[in-house]
Amino acid sequence: MTTAFADVSATPVAELLSLTGRQAVVTGGAQGLGKAIAWRLAEAGSNVLIGDVNAERARVAADEISQRFSVQALGVAMDVTSSESVQAGASAAAEEFGGIDIWVNNAGIFPSVPVLETPDHTWEQVFAVNTRGVFNGSREAARHMTGGKSGGVIINIISTAGFTGTAPGLSAYVGSKHAVRGMTKQMALEFAPLGIRVLGVAPTFVPTEGNMAAAAAHPPSEPGGTMAVMTNSLIGRIGTPDDIARVVLFCASDLSTIMTGSTLLADAGQTI
Image (cartoon, one colour):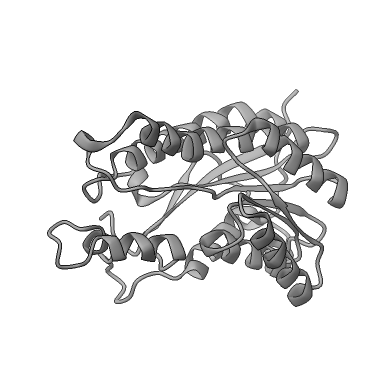
């Protein structure tokens, strides 16, 4: 049975943007992009579960959100490479909030190692987090979104690395993000009849904790270094975490109801 997506043409903009009454999960949400995304979803009215490998940091971030926006927020330990851990986090969200409407696959890693020096375990770990983690999260989200409720939206945080090659040393990362871009399309096909939209957001460089650590390891003076690639912008500045969070909010809201299977480039013109 195919679920038709609502025509919201007559809905006021404020209502289209509102997430009041919805329930969201953000993986890797304790800091950086994930935390900025969780804040914007909560500001729009959604309850939010933050899943992160650092459980304490996730709980602190959730406390900040609940105090700031007067929504329910929960921080839990979640290892996206483990289907059991993802299932436990999803179950916690469903039990605490009554369901799941929005799932953001944000958790990711990007060790920089030249191809000829990359050990098997590094390659496998990158794909375990960045690719299998998205699969685990999307599968569990869809199971909850189809459990008697009217669908939802899954948002995969990809990267401009899902469109092009990037700095030397990031072969595993680039491969993993290209894979997620393809998964986004395929899952959109499979989940559309269930009333679930699937979208990707591909950020340019933004100064998160992880990105700044990578930039410090490969300074601008290093030819082709990570920082030189990350700061290629046409808008006169580098991005901020909130620049990306606002694009995710658009994807999560009814403003984007017509869209599924697309990956939105939030790249400051980097890939032109």
